[in-house]
Length: 257
Image (tube, rainbow, N blue to C red; front, side, top):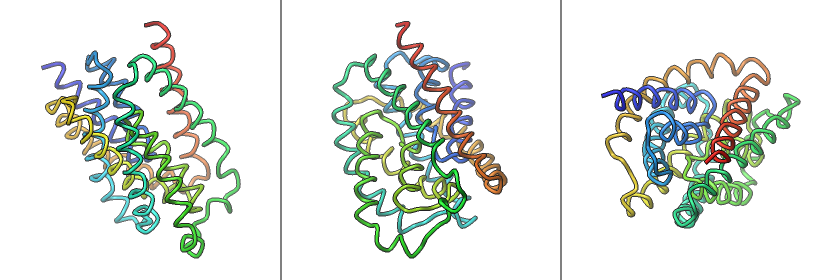
Protein backbone atom coordinates (compact mmCIF):
# COMPACT_ATOMS: atom_id res chain seq x y z
CA UNK A 1 0.00 0.00 0.00
CA UNK A 2 2.82 2.39 0.94
CA UNK A 3 4.60 1.58 -2.32
CA UNK A 4 1.53 2.47 -4.38
CA UNK A 5 1.00 5.74 -2.48
CA UNK A 6 4.66 6.67 -2.95
CA UNK A 7 4.32 5.94 -6.68
CA UNK A 8 1.36 8.34 -6.97
CA UNK A 9 3.11 11.09 -4.99
CA UNK A 10 6.33 10.68 -7.00
CA UNK A 11 4.28 10.77 -10.20
CA UNK A 12 2.80 14.09 -9.07
CA UNK A 13 6.28 15.52 -8.55
CA UNK A 14 7.39 14.28 -11.96
CA UNK A 15 4.31 15.73 -13.69
CA UNK A 16 4.82 19.07 -11.95
CA UNK A 17 8.46 19.24 -13.05
CA UNK A 18 7.61 18.19 -16.60
CA UNK A 19 4.94 20.86 -17.06
CA UNK A 20 6.98 23.55 -15.30
CA UNK A 21 10.27 23.10 -17.13
CA UNK A 22 9.61 20.69 -20.01
CA UNK A 23 12.26 18.42 -18.47
CA UNK A 24 13.04 16.50 -15.35
CA UNK A 25 10.40 13.89 -16.18
CA UNK A 26 12.34 10.65 -16.43
CA UNK A 27 15.33 12.46 -14.98
CA UNK A 28 13.32 12.61 -11.75
CA UNK A 29 11.30 9.45 -12.29
CA UNK A 30 14.25 7.08 -12.56
CA UNK A 31 15.92 8.01 -9.22
CA UNK A 32 12.49 8.23 -7.54
CA UNK A 33 11.60 4.73 -8.72
CA UNK A 34 14.97 3.43 -7.58
CA UNK A 35 15.44 5.22 -4.26
CA UNK A 36 11.90 6.06 -3.09
CA UNK A 37 9.49 3.53 -4.59
CA UNK A 38 12.05 0.76 -4.24
CA UNK A 39 12.69 -0.77 -7.67
CA UNK A 40 16.09 -2.48 -7.75
CA UNK A 41 16.61 -2.88 -11.50
CA UNK A 42 17.53 0.33 -13.34
CA UNK A 43 16.42 -1.12 -16.67
CA UNK A 44 12.96 -1.84 -15.21
CA UNK A 45 12.90 1.70 -13.80
CA UNK A 46 13.84 3.10 -17.21
CA UNK A 47 11.10 1.20 -19.05
CA UNK A 48 8.44 2.07 -16.46
CA UNK A 49 9.35 5.75 -16.32
CA UNK A 50 9.53 6.04 -20.11
CA UNK A 51 5.92 4.90 -20.48
CA UNK A 52 4.53 7.00 -17.62
CA UNK A 53 6.42 10.16 -18.57
CA UNK A 54 5.55 9.93 -22.27
CA UNK A 55 1.81 9.73 -21.56
CA UNK A 56 2.18 12.45 -18.94
CA UNK A 57 3.87 14.70 -21.49
CA UNK A 58 0.95 14.43 -23.90
CA UNK A 59 -1.52 15.26 -21.14
CA UNK A 60 0.56 18.23 -19.97
CA UNK A 61 0.75 19.45 -23.56
CA UNK A 62 -2.93 20.48 -23.39
CA UNK A 63 -2.62 23.49 -21.04
CA UNK A 64 0.51 24.72 -22.86
CA UNK A 65 -1.26 24.46 -26.21
CA UNK A 66 -4.24 26.39 -24.89
CA UNK A 67 -1.87 29.13 -23.73
CA UNK A 68 -0.30 29.32 -27.20
CA UNK A 69 3.10 28.01 -26.12
CA UNK A 70 3.43 25.14 -28.62
CA UNK A 71 5.30 25.64 -31.92
CA UNK A 72 3.71 22.76 -33.80
CA UNK A 73 5.80 22.87 -36.97
CA UNK A 74 9.14 22.92 -35.19
CA UNK A 75 7.97 20.38 -32.63
CA UNK A 76 6.74 17.84 -35.19
CA UNK A 77 9.94 18.03 -37.26
CA UNK A 78 12.07 17.69 -34.13
CA UNK A 79 10.00 14.78 -32.79
CA UNK A 80 9.81 12.73 -35.99
CA UNK A 81 13.61 12.83 -36.36
CA UNK A 82 14.11 12.13 -32.66
CA UNK A 83 11.90 9.03 -32.56
CA UNK A 84 14.27 7.31 -34.97
CA UNK A 85 17.18 8.17 -32.72
CA UNK A 86 15.26 6.99 -29.63
CA UNK A 87 14.71 3.51 -31.09
CA UNK A 88 18.41 3.11 -31.84
CA UNK A 89 19.57 4.63 -28.55
CA UNK A 90 17.23 2.54 -26.40
CA UNK A 91 18.36 -0.68 -28.10
CA UNK A 92 21.97 0.14 -27.29
CA UNK A 93 21.13 1.27 -23.74
CA UNK A 94 19.52 -2.05 -22.82
CA UNK A 95 22.88 -3.76 -23.24
CA UNK A 96 24.89 -1.34 -21.08
CA UNK A 97 25.81 -2.21 -17.49
CA UNK A 98 23.33 -0.62 -15.08
CA UNK A 99 25.88 1.10 -12.83
CA UNK A 100 27.78 2.54 -15.79
CA UNK A 101 24.50 3.76 -17.27
CA UNK A 102 23.62 5.57 -14.04
CA UNK A 103 27.02 7.25 -13.87
CA UNK A 104 26.90 8.40 -17.50
CA UNK A 105 23.35 9.62 -17.02
CA UNK A 106 24.32 11.70 -13.97
CA UNK A 107 27.25 13.32 -15.79
CA UNK A 108 25.10 14.15 -18.83
CA UNK A 109 22.45 15.80 -16.64
CA UNK A 110 25.03 18.08 -14.99
CA UNK A 111 26.62 19.04 -18.33
CA UNK A 112 23.26 19.92 -19.91
CA UNK A 113 22.30 21.99 -16.84
CA UNK A 114 25.51 24.01 -17.07
CA UNK A 115 24.95 24.60 -20.78
CA UNK A 116 21.43 25.81 -20.03
CA UNK A 117 22.80 28.48 -17.70
CA UNK A 118 24.72 29.95 -20.62
CA UNK A 119 21.62 30.25 -22.81
CA UNK A 120 19.36 33.23 -23.15
CA UNK A 121 21.49 35.71 -21.20
CA UNK A 122 20.04 38.40 -23.40
CA UNK A 123 16.29 38.51 -23.89
CA UNK A 124 16.57 39.23 -27.61
CA UNK A 125 18.35 35.90 -28.11
CA UNK A 126 15.24 34.07 -26.92
CA UNK A 127 12.62 35.87 -28.98
CA UNK A 128 10.67 33.56 -31.29
CA UNK A 129 11.52 33.94 -34.94
CA UNK A 130 8.80 32.45 -37.13
CA UNK A 131 10.52 33.54 -40.33
CA UNK A 132 13.71 31.70 -39.38
CA UNK A 133 11.83 28.49 -38.55
CA UNK A 134 10.93 28.08 -42.25
CA UNK A 135 14.59 27.58 -43.13
CA UNK A 136 15.82 25.36 -40.32
CA UNK A 137 14.14 22.00 -41.04
CA UNK A 138 17.53 20.34 -41.49
CA UNK A 139 18.86 21.84 -38.30
CA UNK A 140 15.81 20.75 -36.33
CA UNK A 141 16.08 17.23 -37.77
CA UNK A 142 19.77 16.86 -36.87
CA UNK A 143 19.35 18.18 -33.33
CA UNK A 144 16.18 16.11 -32.88
CA UNK A 145 17.93 12.94 -34.05
CA UNK A 146 20.76 13.46 -31.58
CA UNK A 147 18.46 14.34 -28.70
CA UNK A 148 16.28 11.32 -29.42
CA UNK A 149 19.27 8.97 -29.53
CA UNK A 150 20.53 10.17 -26.15
CA UNK A 151 17.02 10.11 -24.68
CA UNK A 152 16.58 6.52 -25.82
CA UNK A 153 20.03 5.45 -24.64
CA UNK A 154 19.47 6.82 -21.14
CA UNK A 155 15.79 5.83 -21.11
CA UNK A 156 14.47 9.34 -20.49
CA UNK A 157 11.85 11.50 -22.15
CA UNK A 158 14.64 13.89 -23.03
CA UNK A 159 13.02 17.17 -22.05
CA UNK A 160 16.31 18.37 -20.61
CA UNK A 161 17.75 17.83 -24.10
CA UNK A 162 14.74 18.94 -26.15
CA UNK A 163 14.28 22.32 -24.43
CA UNK A 164 17.80 23.61 -25.12
CA UNK A 165 17.73 21.84 -28.51
CA UNK A 166 14.64 23.76 -29.59
CA UNK A 167 16.04 27.03 -28.24
CA UNK A 168 19.20 26.42 -30.26
CA UNK A 169 17.66 25.18 -33.50
CA UNK A 170 14.39 27.11 -33.67
CA UNK A 171 15.32 30.28 -31.76
CA UNK A 172 12.27 30.18 -29.50
CA UNK A 173 11.99 31.59 -25.99
CA UNK A 174 12.03 29.14 -23.12
CA UNK A 175 8.29 29.10 -22.36
CA UNK A 176 7.59 28.10 -25.99
CA UNK A 177 10.45 25.59 -25.94
CA UNK A 178 8.94 24.03 -22.80
CA UNK A 179 5.48 23.71 -24.35
CA UNK A 180 6.81 22.41 -27.66
CA UNK A 181 9.24 20.01 -25.98
CA UNK A 182 6.35 17.96 -24.62
CA UNK A 183 5.73 16.68 -28.17
CA UNK A 184 9.28 15.37 -28.26
CA UNK A 185 9.21 14.02 -24.71
CA UNK A 186 6.03 12.08 -25.49
CA UNK A 187 7.37 10.70 -28.76
CA UNK A 188 10.81 9.76 -27.45
CA UNK A 189 9.33 8.20 -24.33
CA UNK A 190 6.86 6.04 -26.25
CA UNK A 191 9.60 4.83 -28.59
CA UNK A 192 11.79 3.90 -25.63
CA UNK A 193 8.90 2.32 -23.72
CA UNK A 194 7.95 0.19 -26.72
CA UNK A 195 11.50 -1.10 -26.99
CA UNK A 196 11.69 -1.91 -23.26
CA UNK A 197 8.23 -3.51 -23.30
CA UNK A 198 9.49 -5.97 -25.91
CA UNK A 199 11.99 -7.14 -23.28
CA UNK A 200 9.35 -7.21 -20.50
CA UNK A 201 11.05 -4.31 -18.70
CA UNK A 202 7.96 -2.29 -17.66
CA UNK A 203 6.05 -2.46 -14.37
CA UNK A 204 2.59 -1.62 -15.72
CA UNK A 205 0.99 -1.04 -12.31
CA UNK A 206 3.62 1.48 -11.22
CA UNK A 207 3.44 3.19 -14.60
CA UNK A 208 -0.30 3.69 -14.18
CA UNK A 209 0.11 5.07 -10.66
CA UNK A 210 2.83 7.44 -11.82
CA UNK A 211 0.59 8.66 -14.62
CA UNK A 212 -2.33 9.27 -12.26
CA UNK A 213 -0.22 11.40 -9.91
CA UNK A 214 1.39 13.19 -12.82
CA UNK A 215 -1.89 14.50 -14.20
CA UNK A 216 -2.55 16.63 -11.12
CA UNK A 217 1.05 17.73 -10.74
CA UNK A 218 1.25 18.58 -14.43
CA UNK A 219 -1.65 21.01 -14.44
CA UNK A 220 -0.23 22.81 -11.41
CA UNK A 221 3.19 23.02 -13.06
CA UNK A 222 1.76 24.45 -16.28
CA UNK A 223 -0.01 27.24 -14.39
CA UNK A 224 3.17 28.14 -12.49
CA UNK A 225 5.26 28.08 -15.68
CA UNK A 226 2.97 30.66 -17.24
CA UNK A 227 3.45 33.00 -14.26
CA UNK A 228 7.22 32.54 -14.09
CA UNK A 229 7.72 33.01 -17.83
CA UNK A 230 7.28 36.77 -17.46
CA UNK A 231 10.28 36.92 -15.13
CA UNK A 232 13.43 36.93 -17.23
CA UNK A 233 15.67 33.92 -16.61
CA UNK A 234 13.71 32.40 -13.70
CA UNK A 235 12.69 29.24 -15.55
CA UNK A 236 16.22 28.74 -16.86
CA UNK A 237 17.64 28.89 -13.32
CA UNK A 238 14.96 26.57 -11.91
CA UNK A 239 15.51 24.09 -14.73
CA UNK A 240 19.30 24.11 -14.34
CA UNK A 241 19.30 23.96 -10.53
CA UNK A 242 16.94 20.98 -10.59
CA UNK A 243 19.12 19.05 -13.01
CA UNK A 244 22.39 19.81 -11.21
CA UNK A 245 20.90 18.60 -7.91
CA UNK A 246 19.65 15.37 -9.47
CA UNK A 247 22.91 14.74 -11.31
CA UNK A 248 25.09 15.18 -8.23
CA UNK A 249 22.80 12.98 -6.13
CA UNK A 250 22.80 10.16 -8.67
CA UNK A 251 26.57 10.40 -9.13
CA UNK A 252 27.14 10.12 -5.39
CA UNK A 253 24.79 7.14 -5.13
CA UNK A 254 26.50 5.42 -8.05
CA UNK A 255 29.99 5.89 -6.59
CA UNK A 256 28.82 4.36 -3.29
CA UNK A 257 27.46 1.23 -4.95
